[in-house]
Length: 281
Image (spheres, rainbow, N blue to C red):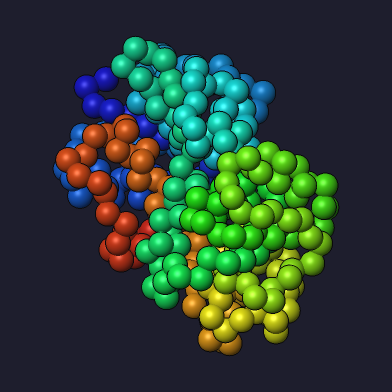
């Protein structure tokens, strides 16, 4: 191909916003290239990935549910972030024809937090993370890197939270604990990594009475943009950040690797407006 092609693979994939944001950056920079959606079933994942990278000559792809762990096993090599999380969300075809798996979810969460209005970064004592799935792994790793002293992982199944702790305990100094109910006292940051509160899902039921007024609250859910958790936190005066920024920021490293823009693509209000417009359609 005379221009780079990348895309997003998953199942289902029709509602992915990735083509909108990558297309916006391509247009901004005036770069040749294309970004596509490609639905891949679990049973054909390896064959389809090989065909895209070899036969169709893709420069790489984003990988979404349910394939992130399968992509980790598929890739010829993985970077430190993917190895740490045991999952790949970004694949880059290298000049020698091999491929490298990366995980930019950690980067995306951290940048969304660091650039959020109201986030000062001064309170890094205790963080409470709701959920213990794949998204929670990226969030906990990011909080370790940010220097939190304690991270409390809340999950109905303690064993799952304990497995997460076992996997990540050696990669940071934070004290990790598994609990079945939110312990919000003296909490500096509250993060929801579950699908509760997402459109079509049950609401997240949580009592914020014990949450300090200085605590920051964020949710990885971005449909709706303001979840019940964020609305409740904002109503009581807590600073908040929605989950859309994590999606936008995690896309930056992949775009750079595939399309080689002259400078880092910006995650700004104009990009948010365009993506929100696509969400509303």
